[in-house]
Image (cartoon, rainbow, N blue to C red):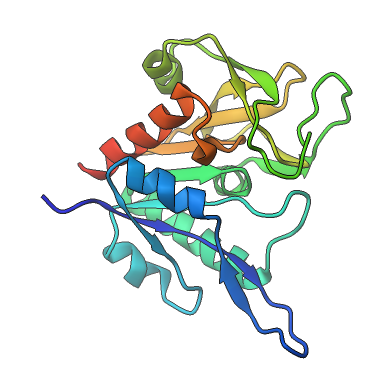
Length: 218
């Protein structure tokens, strides 16, 4: 049986200058997490037509970006088109960090600067390879039921955060009230995660990619 193909969006460096040229880049651990879940990762070029790429793939991962920075206009325009089409077609959709915020915007939420709160450091280090803070997982949600958890420790690397309401259910929050995960009120699988499960630091992180992969096999 062929592996599900997952389209993942890279960051785009549009800088020009001597010895520099526009570059796509995406951290290898996104592809590694997709592969470990039994799927085939495919990087999306922003010169392509979103509908054409979507017809070739079984699911979409909208990745993170540099914390606190605005993504390149070409990336944002492509991702907004891709998200809208994926939601319309019911394609499984997973958003991480910036990806969660952008999907949330399409579903009616808004992205705001992170609230200042010394009790929770949402950007403790430049590489989120350690657990940083706890999140409270709401019961009676897909993630809560699958994980069997009411709380979990997660890594973190962000300055912006998603605010509701929108066509989504908040399923996890940090102790300071920052939204950490949502489930879209959509026809297909739609999950937004504010932390970085692609580092696979916990069983919950691995389960997130397994659930996404399972949805992409249907």
